[in-house]
Length: 299
Image (spheres, rainbow, N blue to C red):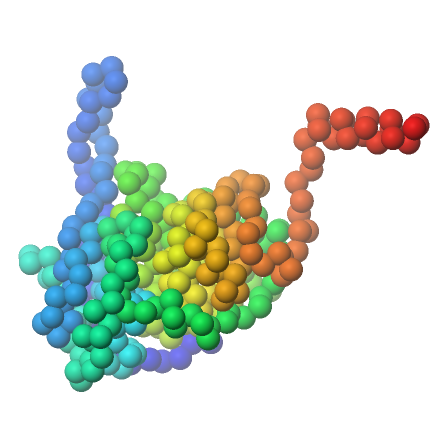
């Protein structure tokens, strides 16, 4: 259910995601192609430098909002008066409606992470997960397959230039039809995640009935971000780390990794997952199993 939240004054300074270049292939032939953009964006909160993010730059204002939200550096959207992005100075200036009282304490606790183009978590965010428990939603294998097929039409920048990750805020309706609220590509999966968080925050979107998809690996920081966004199902075409799985089990995030084609690995939430579209056994294996069963019957 959408609410109507406060909306800060914001620029619209999105950049084009890729750039035309020439390259020489293995035979020495010249080829025209594209490379993904990458720009530094330094975030200032009330004139205080917070972090520099390496980003594709397509959704810089949403990235800034989502970063502040997921880092818990501001108490809420109402605390933000404006987000101004200026690519001439590679800076994003955020002004607040009042001074953030505990900013020094939050910035004093830093964890260096595996995040691509980001790599730092401020504050004691893992401590905040102790009281968080996500809704126990159910998900069907047939819905998963339909969603994966649907998402094949995305990843536009990756197909053109590579070097990016894609993330999507998805949903499945009562008839099982999949859809996306927003799909974001960026040079780091954490940037794409933060941009989606910013979109949700700006538009008052509740994550309880949503599915989060990413092409990147499910590290602890990715699980933390998705949990903070209130999304109960996390889906990736890549793998999951031990710490990421530990946190997913702690807060109740259904975790599905290595999802591509008809293959996937369900690591958490099996009691809420319905295997209603199991692939047929390969013919050779099915034949061996039938032969083994016949031998056991005769014995």
